[in-house]
Length: 137
Image (cartoon, rainbow, N blue to C red):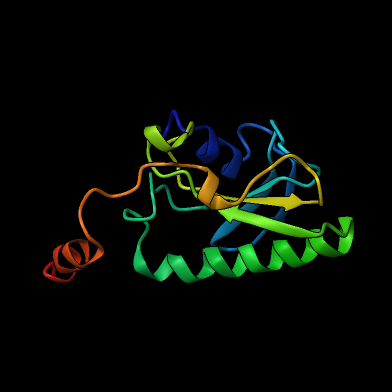
């Protein structure tokens, strides 16, 4: 994708703080870090979100997430991690190329759990939601 910042980093047209690269993925430090060691794993194939990522590329992305989490753990010794994907503009996705954030966490770092991202409890029962989801093939 010619105008995609992450594609430009992958193609070395724009510099990035690359911490890992293999055939399918690249991992870079986030240039607007929310914590020391805040990194992103990016598939080399352009896919706007997880639904567009080809099935055979899902595994390699999450294998790299695991490798980078271990590497950051050894290097910086955080107390934990928050790992996530912003899927779509409403969720905060700023670059329209799938990327998985790895956020090292420390006690009293001011952050919250994934559950703190949204507060929109369902009006329908869980059984109604379950039925809707299960009827999709």
